[in-house]
Every structure is written in C-alpha cells, then in structure tokens.
Length: 478
Image 1 (cartoon, one colour):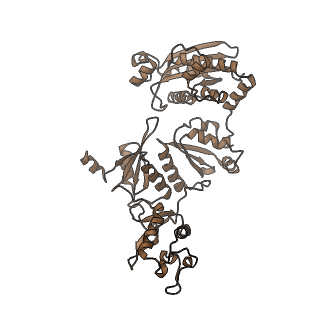
Image 2: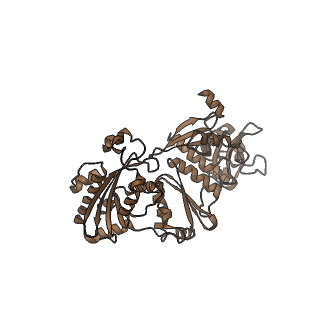
Image 3: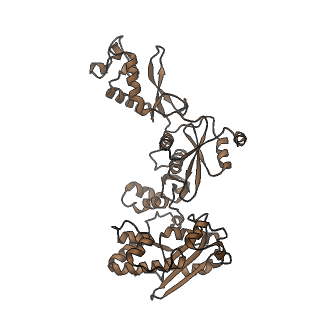
C-alpha cells in the first residue's frame, strides 16, 4: 500500500496548543511494519513547565506524574530511530509534527518525515460528511476507544481508523487519495525543500526573494502555510505564478496575532521594499484628496490637497483618496454629472465670458448655479451630499493609540497607530515605547493603511489603548 518501511500512528499530549511556548507531556506510537506486525510504545515526558489545570483535567496528566519522567532530550535519539523511514500519521498532523519538530530542534537535532493527516484523509474520502474530529469518527466508524486524551489510546484509535477506511474504500481510491495528500508541491528550482517545513499555518506575512536578495513578492494570509504552498501548487496554471516561481531563491515569513496585523504589515512592507511582482499596495507618490475650502466670496469650493503637504490624519473636510490629480478630477466630474452640479462653480471648468453658463447647463446637467439659476447655498448643500460617501474620517484620538489584537495561540500584538499612520507592532512595553520614540513629527499618510484601520475601528474588531505622549506620563498616570 505504501513505499514506507513502516506506518507510525502518533499522538501527543501537551501543556497547550502553542508549539513554541508549550511542551510535550506524553507521546504514544502505534508502529505497523511492512509485514503487518504491530508495536506499541509510549512515554510520559517531563515538560519542565507546569501543566495548566484545565489541561490536567482534560488529559488526566498532572505535574506529579511527569516530575520523574524523562525530558525530551533524553528520549530524542530513540524516538528519531522509531520515526526514521516511516510515514508519520496523525490527526491534525501539523499540530503533532510541529510540536515534535520544535522539540527535536531544542534538543539539538531535527525531524523530517512524510506526514499524512487523518482529518484530511477522512475529508477526502467522505466529503459529504460535515465533521471529522476524532469523537465523530469513533462513532461513525465504530472505533473502540481505550480511554480518550491519552497519547497511546488516541494513537491506537488512528490505527483502527486506518483499517476501517481501507475496508470501506475501494483499494484504488484509497491509494490515489493517500498519494494525493502526500504529493509535494512543485517547488522552484532554487528553493530547498526543507525551507517549507517550518512554515506555520497562522496569520502573517510571507516574502519571496530572488537572486542576490531581490524582493520579488510580499503576501499575507490568515493561513500562512496553506497560502505559500498554493503558489507552488498552481504555478503550472498561471503564467505570472510560474514566472515568479522560477525566480524564487529564498522565502521568509513573519507571524502576526491576526488578520489586521497581517494586512498592516503587508501594506508597509510592499511600500518599503517595492517587490517587483506586487502591483497593488505600492506607495502613492501623488496621494491627494478633495478638501472643501471657503473662497474669498465665502463659498465652499473643492480644492485638491496633497498628502505630502497636508496632514490628512488631522485635516477636516477631506473627501476621497486618489493616486493622481487625473483620478481625482475624473471622480469629481462623475459626481457632478450624477448630481447635476455646476462644473464652473466646482472649479473644473473655466468660464470664458461673464454670466456664460457652464457646459453642463447647456446639456441640462446643471441646476444653474453658474448663472444664478440656483442659490449658491443650495448648490453647496448638494455638493456636500454628493461628497459624503467619500469623506475621510478625522483621526478620532488626541494622540497615538495601541490597537490590541489577540491570536488563537495566545499571542498579543499591539499595533501602534497615530493619525491613521501605522508605526509598527509591539509585543512588549519596551517595544511599544521604542516605536513611539522613533516616530517622525508627521508620519506619512497611506491610503491602504487608512482603509484597513478605519474599517477595523468601525467594526470594533480590536481593543483600543490610548497612549500617553511619553513613558514618564504613563508612569505618572499609573
């Protein structure tokens, strides 16, 4: 059925769900050799940290049970021998494999196995079923548990599940499904296969580099691993992906607590690095907006304002964000036409003769503000109504704030924002104040960052922490 010397069904018990911060407390293995011989092995592991009470309740493993158990480094060599030349089979396999890889790395070693996830296998074989967690599969396939949430008992359930799936599936279908799940993506020629091993399936940003470290592409996802692999799984379908794939020499990634952090970091990195394959999110060098200003005659008129001359985070009566004057004027003309506004009064058309109507008036697309047919106050009111959907919100705080984003793995990031400008993300108080101390007097306003932040604040997705102007003031307030 497989080209492996043995199948290893494995389950771990841990102190939590974070493979970086948490530790293994128990390992259970059911090993099936090429002849069908079955060997069972398990051990408690001293995690060298306390086991949280709720985990003790779930697994039945407490601090006293693991106090005299071996630490991972003491069993690493023997465990590596068991896993060598095997197919590593686990439920939610990235969890177990990620914990083991980190444990081997901390012990001064490494781990490389072909990995098969029984959750994915069940989904492929039974796509009509909505759930595939182990408790559901026990009931669905009549598995016989010898306890739950202990490593060897759960590993044995996976072996039972394997035999049930083989019995209930046509051999060629089962074989094809396993091969499909084990199929590695078609990697770029210059990219080492092991460079993909540690990519987490968490929110974050990934970066592709070409020869001599040239930035090729910056992307983001709430599932980093899945997104990065998708570039290589589909490179034979899209020419642009195939072209970029052939240029990749190195990749790296940066984890974030959630989607907002990934969006902010992606927008910042694209502007800072200018990768050759990113077409959106690039820096807008002529970023501008319409601002309603009072003329000498006391009337409101839209005037084009530029972000490099005016603080868009503090300015009032700003409308729209445009990459160029041409785009700004085109948008205002469209609004004028749809709302029958006067092009002369808006400053979009020069009048060659006094009291001559604008071109729109001649086409009955203007109410006549240019020739006294409409009171200027009424025209101004209609102009403000037309522009309202484009209004740029004024920064609602007196100073910088920290937007606190929490991840499923317990990670907390504080995104430091001032006047709609992203200054960076901090994971400690020192990081936070370091960011604030390096902030320029007027950070560059960015259209993409504004849209990300205004949407997040409107939806109240993040907790807001108002930051004092200095660390000393923060200490005094405390």
